[in-house]
Image (cartoon, rainbow, N blue to C red; front, side, top):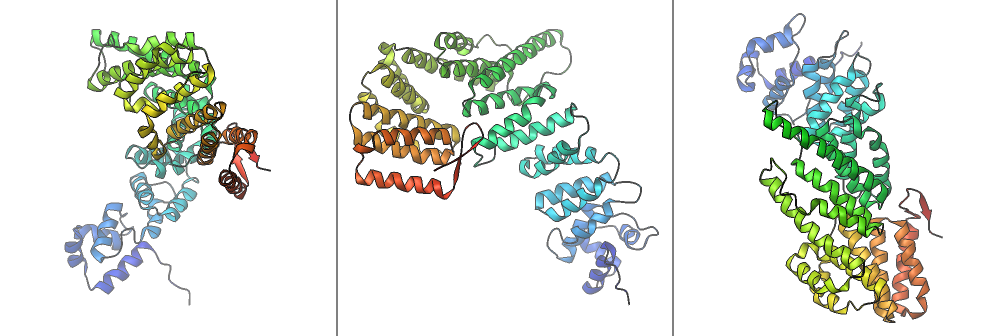
Length: 468
């Protein structure tokens, strides 16, 4: 005898029978209309079940949330069409609950119907905009894989969302970030302008972390040009009182200022100090910017602070040591700038040969807290500071201190998964191996064994480097 096929309705009927309810009593406990229940279970054809009705039944039966969801997949489809009213909230709820098998089954079947990407894209946007970023990515990736129009706005936004999600994911290494930049970059100009601003700013920041200074310059130039154009249009709009105000994630002045800040920072990293000064002046005083709200005015103050700090940075890097006392006083008043400031001071001390002992003594307490940083940018800054301190001590024949800092640096390169920096540290240690104590040599060997256990380490250019 052939077994009866289990369907959503047969399972509901069984549960009604087991619970001792009839339609009238179950309507009361579930909060559903008795007529609707009858049409759902006994109609010819049966009335479709909404997700809200199904959830109400599940609660009334006392079963766990999501019970019967695998059987609800059939409710979303018919031979002729897809039910958007049922399938979209169902996919959203499954994503929120982590019901991956239900999602996979729906997505497998949905691709057999016309215009499935319309639904998939709306689900992805609902999840992303409600803060369910990681849950949305499987849907955006489907768009990327199946969108026939590579120049569509939907394709560009999907690429943008995937890029943004990766940047907010913990433990993403440099190679993954580089791949994300390469994938998203061609689509930046196809985004709506408000998304272009955020996309360009994020591209510039990621490339800064990757030390791709020319790319930082390129994206900063585009960001500055786009923000300037939108600003001019907004001025005309405000005077003519036409249309709605431009809406972006941050005030427009934030993007405009960062266009100058990121350009100046990239030039500084390339040793183009005079050029960097010109762009630093571009964000030093943005009080002239109109249409500022409270966040905008606060951003203007922040840019002014950054310009002051970076002005000192440029003078120190150019060898103007006379500003050092003023710079130290500035850092003392602004503790958040101490780490990046000390990197510059130590780099300059090594380049121009002046003593930085007083600076390290002045900020010794703050230095103890540096290794508490977890974000990649600050961990990279700590690495660069320690590397410069290692060189500083070794150049003064203070080998024990210098080698201790090399070992600190090696640990940080492993955290950063940066092969290039790892090689620099190994080279510096080997050049001074004869001065290392037994304890230091053992610590060094242990770190090398740790890297070998992982077999390979990521190099900044995205290739793999096997430690031999």
